[in-house]
Length: 98
Image (cartoon, rainbow, N blue to C red; front, top):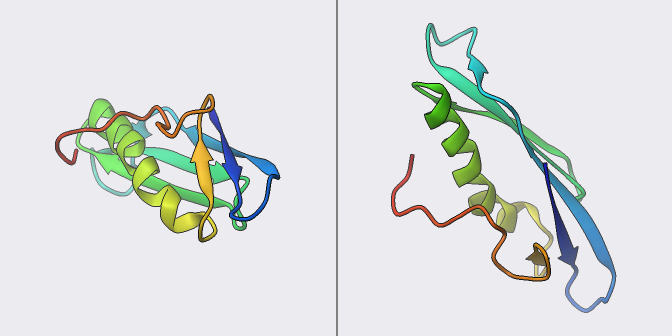
């Protein structure tokens, strides 16, 4: 679990945004692939979705990779997300998509 802080545009109010990336598990539908559950709470609408990979590591990395990609779309317009006071949310910047 990682707790980010979100400041809304034109406001000094700070809201916690909780990001959870679950442990990889076998996908019961795919016949052998793995999945992780990504959950984000603290925005206007909660977010929950599985991300997949051919093995546990790829599924986990897919979950880590997608979070900084989707947060700007889920956050209100003009919101600023930080982690430990910095703009870097700590999910890394992969050079390629998983």
